[in-house]
Length: 219
Length: 219
Image (cartoon, rainbow over the protein chains, first blue to last red):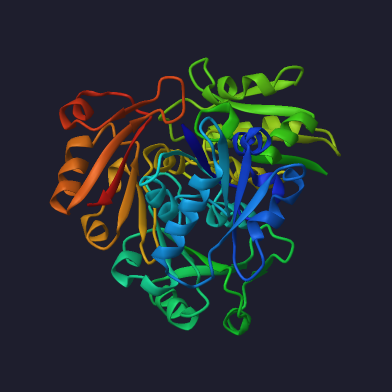
C-alpha cells in the first residue's frame, strides 16, 4: 500500500504545527508541497523541518480552478511512491478548510494511494487567539465564510463570524457587518512574519493583500 | 510582570498539541489545569508532558456557570505567580472556542497577570479530518453551534455545520438537519481513546456521552 498524509501546518508561525504533523514529516519517505509561480509558502513556513527530506513540488497555479491539475498531482504522487512508502502533503492552515488538499484527496481515491488527514490550526483560530476575542462563548454560534458569499441573513443570527479571502469584496463585507451590529478587525497574514492587525476602516480598505481575514463579533 | 499562556492542547490525541504549546509547557514555572469532580481530562491528555512540572488544579465544576469560580481561579493564579514567572493554563481543544479559558482571561484582566493565547486544534477540525469530509470547499460556508441554539434559517444558507454538545437536543438537531438536506455523522470523543463514529440514527439517539458532536454537510 502507498500512503499520503494530508497535514495542516498551521497559519504561519512554524511552532503552530502539531507534534503529529512534525513527526510525520520526520518519518515519511517524501514531502509533497503545493507550489504556485515558483513559490511555496507552506514550504517556507515548514522549511526548518524539511532539511534532509526528499521534497517534491506540485504545481497549483493560484486562482486556477483546474481539475486536471489535481489529477496530475495525484498521478505524480502515485508514480513516485512504491508500495509500503509514506508521504505527506503540506497544507497551510487546516487541510479540510478552504484547501487544495480536499480536491487532491478525491483524486487520490482513483489510485491505490490511501489518505489520512491531520488537522491543522486555522488562520481564524489563530486570529481569535491573537486578538483575545472568543470565537464562541457558551450558547453562542459562529459563521465561517469566504469573501464572495457572505450571507446577511446568517449574520443576523450568529454571534461571531470570520470571513476569509476578503480582498475582492471588502467594502461590501464591511457594510454588511456594520449594518448588523458587528465590531470587526482585519488581520493580514496571521502569525506570519508580515502579520498586521488593522482596526481602521480606511486602512483596511486600502490594503490589497489576498491573505487576509476579517474577524467580527457582536459588540 | 506575571504571565499566563492559555494554550489549546487539542481534542484528545496527545500528538495533536502544537509545538508552541508543548514548548511553553516545558519552559513555564507553573501548569494550571481545569478540574471537575476530581478529574482533569486536559491533565490526562497532556499527562506525558507534565512530568517534573508543578501542576495546580483549578476547580470548575461541570455545568456550573459560576462567575465567582473564575474570579477565584484568577486570584489563585495571581497569588501563585511572582513577578517574572510564566505559567500555562491547559484547555481542551481551542481556548477561544466554547472554553472556560475565555472567562478566566477576562477575570485575569483585573489582576496584574498578562495573558497570551495559543490556539489549539478543535474537535470539529479533528472530526472533519477523521471523516475525510471537507469543512469548506471553495465558495462554501460553515456554521458552528452548540446543541441548544441550532438555527434552521442559518442551516438553509450554509454548506456544512458542526453542532457541539448535542446530548440534550439530539432528536431535534437531527430533525432540523434532515429537513434541510444534510447528511450527518455523530462523533464521540474525537481522537480520544474511547473515540466512536456513529452513522446509524438509532445508535446516535441512544448514546448519552456529553462529549459528542454532529458533523453535517449537504449531500
